[in-house]
Image (cartoon, rainbow, N blue to C red; front, side):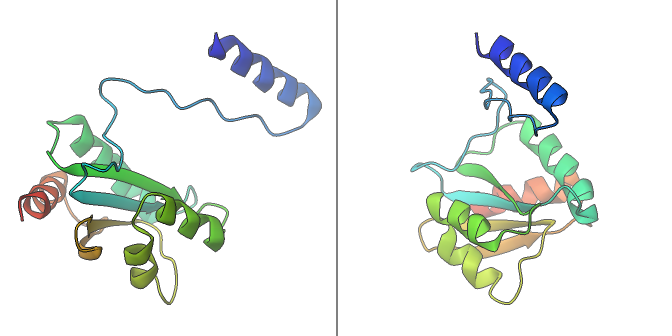
Amino acid sequence: MRLPVFIAAVLLAACSGEPAAQAPAQTTETAAPAVTEETKIAAVLSYADWCTSCKILDPKLKAVQAGAPIDGVGYLTIDYTERDQDAFFATADAAGVGGAVRAFYADEIKTGILLLVDMSTGDVVADIRKSMSEEEIRTSLETAAAA
């Protein structure tokens, strides 16, 4: 029932010149687990649609997520497309990783970085960059979750 409403909103927005509403989040069996109370390691991606590093790292991360699940790892993408620092940190705070994210980005928010945050200590235990392969990303996630 939501899909026809969304399509109508998109068509109406296209005709009116107003920005279209975003589709409601769809949950599927293959969706990566979000950061929850059971999360041991939060994999936090700072993302922006204009970021070249994001366009390299994001598909690798999605490929890793599409593989076998890694127990204890939850995923969070924080959108920085609009360069809204307050919204960026509010999202991190709401997920329980605000302290680690604020400490890591104390001087400047940079996109295209995947932070691995130990939820028990609140520390960033690793950061993953675009140069890493899917295998290296998976190994880093598994190692952090096993520690």
